[in-house]
Image (cartoon, rainbow, N blue to C red; front, side, top):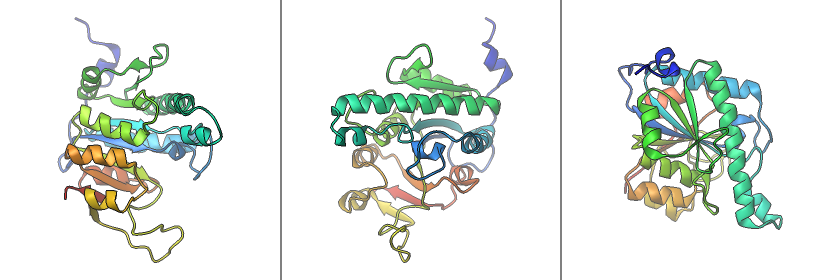
Amino acid sequence: MKPAADESIFPPPPLVPGLQYSRVLLKLSGEALCGVDGGFGIMPEVLSTLASELAEVHAAGVQIGIVVGGGNIFRGLKGASAGMDRSQSDYMGMLATVMNGLALQDSLEKKNVPTRVMSALEIRQVAEPYIRRRAVRHLEKGRIVIFAAGTGNPYFSTDTAAALRAMEIHADALFKATKVNGIYDRDPARHPDAKMYAQVTFSRFLADRIGVMDSTAVTLCRENRMPIRVFKLTERGNIMRVCKGEQLGTVIIED
């Protein structure tokens, strides 16, 4: 049987020695694509820079799954707080993540990285339906997989979707890329003397109600022993550094 076109053009890259993680799930906020905290839309130059970095990590042989939020286009909770029906608002937010996923796919493929968008909502004209075994096969063939539309259900955040997908694809770790260096004892934007944790336990994270990640997602990771690393996205090369196991940001570990 003749191989698919992209399999002959984009063979799976070999794993570079020194990498600690061979398969990861990267959680990105929608705001990461617009380059401005609380901003809206997608900035092509920001998208291109992110795609270049992901292409380098992919070339090193890391299998990458990505869950991207939709807050730069529409945030479900904000719509609900303005009087919209929560379910309707959340579905709109899911569609925003599909838009971001398609934009990221386009940018990655311009860097010659084979990419698939898999949606938890069925939109066959633009994305594959999410099927776990097919997603794993895409990763094994050296394709980056972007998981869009969250879990496909309202009332669940994209953080929870990231934790769920990380478990389903048997990722080595869940990476949460943020605008700050890691997890702090208090808000570093308001308190210059805030101290960053090198590591924090799941129980401490949940007890202190640390807001950097949804508590449902963290609970799911604790129950399935999935390590989480929180680090700063905007510093070039950080994704590769965490894949190499460098002590970057904050790791959330078992009690």
